[in-house]
Length: 405
Image (cartoon, rainbow, N blue to C red):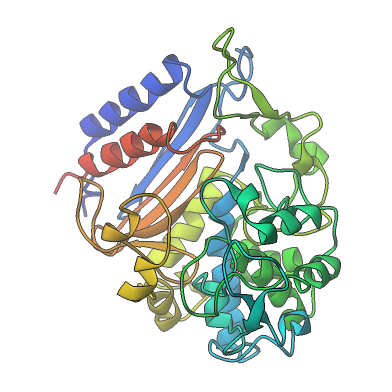
């Protein structure tokens, strides 16, 4: 059977992505496309600026940041299938810190101006980011609850900010002192639900989050390089991470996280289920392929087909989307399932309805497309939306134009 990928058009993708490296938008990248059993991996450029000896490799390690979220969602669904969690049960028993919530009367109001939550937070609320707490785009200093979040050392969970110094139990204790920003189930708010899910998974499984990830997902899928930190014998494969803004005086990229003293060079105090993992293109491809294969990896089954279908179905109502701020126009063509974004309307070459996945804030991207039988993974290491968005757009346009049937 033909792979359905044109070699001539894959060469075009190489030229397009090489152009981003040549123009200095990123020092290097790894682009990966898989279809019908054929895998195309293209490593371009360098792992760091000014290091010609450090060529990018197919097995280079990247901080995948928010691409951690789909893995956390899969881990949650494993526990749902084992009936250790239930989608619509309150999380109060395992997360007593979240019981008896109070909710702000006004988003910008004082912390003591609250009303009781109309109901408890559920596992489904955490998976769909409808728990009633999350990020606000724009000036966060205008909101007392977010100022207190920062004062408690809670906003530093996950890159691009430094990792929190709080253990999961202490993080939950502090978080539990804050009121919710909205009633549970009312609107989508990025991305606190994934942080809380990481704690919930560990408590439900009665083992550390990384142990559960490794035993139930990484080892069965052969994801040997995916973890919350990089051991010393692999540090030479970690790619340097850069800020979104270049030095205004020189135009040079500014280092955000160096390899030598990277926060990922040591195990974290708080294993971050929202943005804490490092991985490789081939490791994440295995995860994306498992999702394409409806939860199977060869003879091994990670999830049931029904769980994958539930994860990749838009869970948001029109009213919830109307109340949920994000990038302008985002909800016109997108929905949200369990830990993944879903394309709901065609608005471009790569926007195939039913395609699902998520991006990472350090310049990584993954999607699985059941209709086309395609999995794509892009790995770079430079922060920045929307300035960096053309690198993503060009990768996905190039991946889809390479389809040859």
